[in-house]
Image (cartoon, rainbow, N blue to C red; front, top):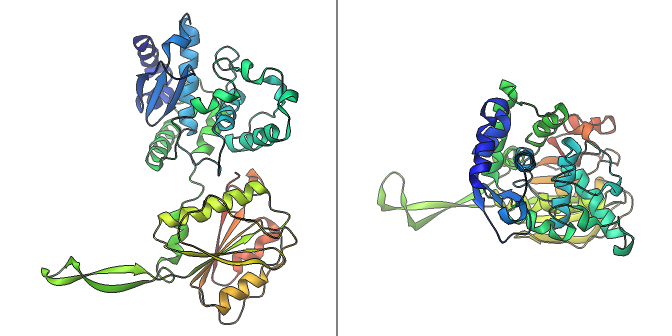
Length: 388
């Protein structure tokens, strides 16, 4: 089986260069224990020969092509939605593949889900999660599990068992896609698939870049001497020094009624990400028409947060707290449905507006017209959060 698969991939060298490059970035590994025909992740493409016994070359090549296409889309290495259900994530990935490159033989998906075509993985995940959470099992689409040839919804977690966020592999795939696009080496991959691959590999949020605006004026540090490190100039003959972060950052989380539960989950993921980039603690508040539930100091990533509010929206109260308590930086996470606040006297820190993208048309850096004022708001920058 391994030799058959490798021979098929070698045949792509001239005819399918995009697929060949993606295949070569992973090692081919046999796995007879898993309950799916093929899966990818952790720089491997695993296959179960027992489950593909009797497949002809056409079916085998098609299944390999679809798994390599999944790698190009980045599904095994991207950030999963907060508290993701891997079974639904796997089905969402299959639906995405089917939408872009339909294969009834080796990767069939339930047709009675009646999902629109040409959406991205994140959009399908939200639709499927909502469907399976709202539909009783006995009323679900007929034979949802059985109609998936090599997995049912319950086996999807096996398909996604190797998936984990991997920034190094994301960058590897991103550079690969950039090279393929620049040289137009897509082979027979259809145009809509190419567009989705390019879109999936755009760096939508660079969290280091987000914090870089705070580096000079916000990310402060305290220098102290220590005998645990040598002096850079004099070696161990003199005490060295270390720096401890002293920045005070306030995160204002919009919990108004116009913000969906999916966006709130994404906001928590955003907040958690900051702990990877030198921030030791964050003060977090929730707000709608006012501040709700008091201030919470986070010193580590949280799995969940109790949501208060769900009323109207006002930016003024978080802005006033930012000024009154002399924070070095304010990160306002919001959908932006509120009037422009008055910039408070005494505010000296920087402000980052993180705005949920209401639709895919905002995936560039342009602000919607109702938020044009943010472009000129004092001490501010903005970034649009991608669709969850």
